[in-house]
Image 1 (spheres, helix red, strand yellow):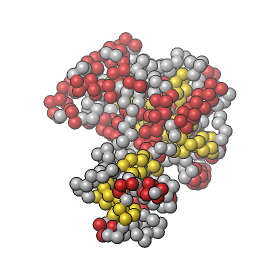
Image 2 (tube, one colour; image 1 turned 60 degrees about the vertical axis):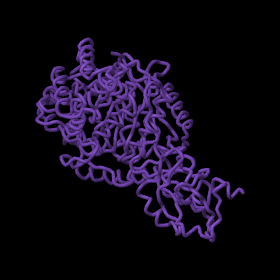
Image 3 (spheres, helix red, strand yellow; image 1 turned 90 degrees about the vertical axis):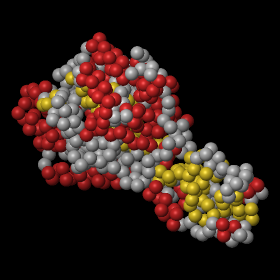
Image 4 (cartoon, helix red, strand yellow; image 1 turned 45 degrees about the vertical axis):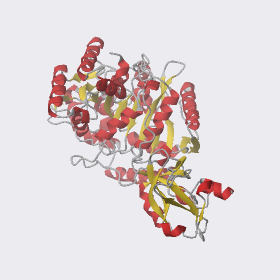
Length: 601
């Protein structure tokens, strides 16, 4: 079996044609693991025979064709509980046998995915390096001697090495993004609460997120769709309301992305060059660069480890650290116990300052659709981390630590290897609940930057890009035909509602167009007439956040209204239609083919 088959689209296609079976895939995976050795990627494995029995059991009890992840192999970081397996959080003395399975993992299992095992990590998810573990230090799958990144080192490595199709990590300060860059895979960090953290050993409970490592953005999106949703067992879980987090820019011809006016690379010229290339490719995809001051985000980032939020780590495992300090990684123990120096007064003051910084961020996000940042400002070898473990760990989080504090979502994509052979990556960081939109744009950027997928040897160009025609969550397509067209007098009613132009097209043939009398500004009326065969009317399709559609509808004067407009490609969307009474004295302009042509005529 070729390693590229573990890309989810290829696997599903092979299963459908009978070219592969999930059993054959599993046997090959376990053979690879046996050949490579379990350490340092794995802490524990599910017995292969148990997985084979489970596949057989699923076939007998359910229609597996309806299971979106049937036969797809995955791994989880060893701070996720899996019933009857040990959870270590990277610390043998902490290990316990879980009674139930974490909600996120259970949802994947219910969808037919096959858990191969639990992966190595920085102890108690404290670190961005992947070296703070007694189970062996993971190195980058694509660059020998370079760190794998942490804390989700084993999860990223298992995907990059072609041992699973996807893996779960956690991300409090960047642990779902830094390892993605170091291993040249996709790292998705959804908005906090979108995926339940019930059954996950906490690091900072109010900030922790379940993250996804995958070979493509499309695979990550599929996994997210299975896991997402509120959970009564997790008080912090949540789901977006109507229109909340809508990202019409993700399907638009153009978008605005923020880049810091001054970027910090700690003297790493190769990292700077890699980012410059990514920013250039983003503009080629239709992006407009907007520079901003990074200082407020850097200040927010410092709150995580230099401020009172570190006390959440003390709340999570401080009692264990006091009793078993000698059995912990000394750097991890020092960080965990460092939270004791903060008082409740300092915690509240930190919260107030964070609120002020969030106001600043909200203003920034009214100017841009998302941020483009280096995933890491530089790259270190394992030996370099050993020389200065705390300082260099902090440098790795320069562009990641603020994201959860600011209630933002992020997607990390690879940039390929630098001339010195070290990996590079960039991250798209967007507003609350914007993960779906970020994945759409990130997929395009990923394909522009590199054709590799980890160390699998597979080619990204051989995989299907994300479907740009699938409607975005929280977004409604709106067809406009006259005064709301680009450059026309009422177009501002679209843009002020954050609507974005998607495409110019034509209606189906059964539509007639009239120039209405007495309207200010002048407006046309579009009328559907079954059986009529005309040229089709030129229209624009805009993407509008659902939450703004109501106010838009309220401002539409009679005889116009919103209805369903059929387009020449067979699709349909909501759009402007005219009541038949409105065209009694109107001039028919159907033959001209559109409002712009009428104005020019």
